[in-house]
Image 1 (cartoon, rainbow, N blue to C red):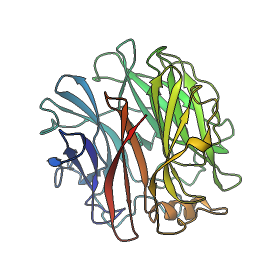
Image 2: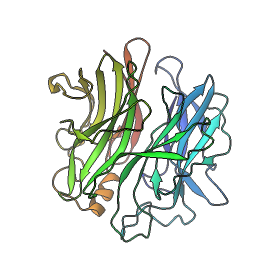
Image 3: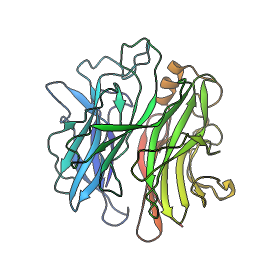
Length: 341
């Protein structure tokens, strides 16, 4: 199953989730669910950005969604004056039939964190059976204060009914560095968690290399993020066992592409001679990829990028399955690749 967002533009009030499925490892696809006109919540019209799913029992799926208040369709998602975000809620929705139909959404309480987003991160089932939901925070729409970005992990001990406890995965003590879009993977031999971040330096006003952090099997203890030397943004790690770690990420600064890198010491070092290009953009330089950018300029750049958001899962035959979007200025399509190791 692959979920994504359909909409008339990158930032539009009619954005809604869709799910496609394949039973032959990607050779053929069918539309399993279309959430068009099914995004109203608590009487307010809104937009749901994707359904990122976790199968908690055979056939039973809990999906994480970001609901955004679009009751005023003229307001952009990002306030051009404050850089704050429209009112939004992290939602969990359950399907008992492999994603063909979904129950009513249930909001996740992220107190005390406002403007919280799951960043398309699915629920993790920890070795203990506890569920963990990654998310990040920024600031509300009309908040003139500087943002204090933080990456969090919230826990449920009752199968996703309540999420009372949280830990901070990564946050710079002076808010000079943002650890955005955390993506997590569990090392199968030890149960330890690997987190990788799109990392931005506010003082330098540009992205820096992807950073990595390591968490204990219960998700309570995390190392300080450190540089990986991977020159990318959104990055999905995948632990393959025996300290082999894969990372697929968007590279924009030089030779724009979706890149797959491999580490044999769980992310401590990466042999760039083994990098594999999954998608080679032929559209030229990406907006704002070089040089310094103000926060407002960076948000504007995000609306213009032609590819990105790679995700990756392991297949049973020593292959990995990668999805991402790619295309031109006018059209971006959902794409996939299978890679043998």
